[in-house]
Image 1: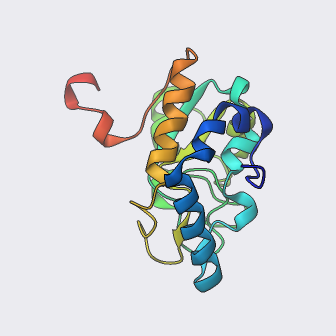
Image 2 (image 1 turned 90 degrees about the horizontal axis):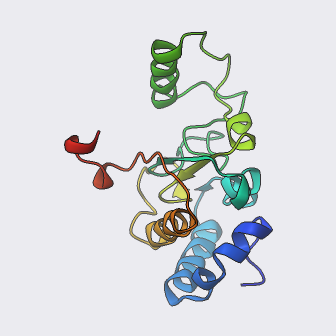
Length: 173
């Protein structure tokens, strides 16, 4: 666990997850992928959502599927792209809904870092992806980890806005 580079409050909250066998297998898989293929986001941004939104600062959680898989897009925050990257359609749709709901204008770029710093945990269900291959790291253990993140946060009294279709039904939307 000592070599996991994640924000200290999250490291403490999730410490038992880092000791589990699935996480050791996940870590081996991810290291192997970075050594043998082009993988996003860059390693220093895998836990960026946690770095920018410490555990006690979380007000809401937005879940995506996996990181954007195009060059330069992923930086560890779901739906977000660096300022120099064109906004993906999914983020354009989010901005459009916000404008429809509360008014205002569409931001000039797709970097959601300011949201994260205000307490929005922008978490993907899988935290890594092979370049140009959507879903390539699904089923490798990330979902177990991010489910644990959700359970841990929820067990501490957190209220969640979830964007995970298998947890939502038309009855509760």
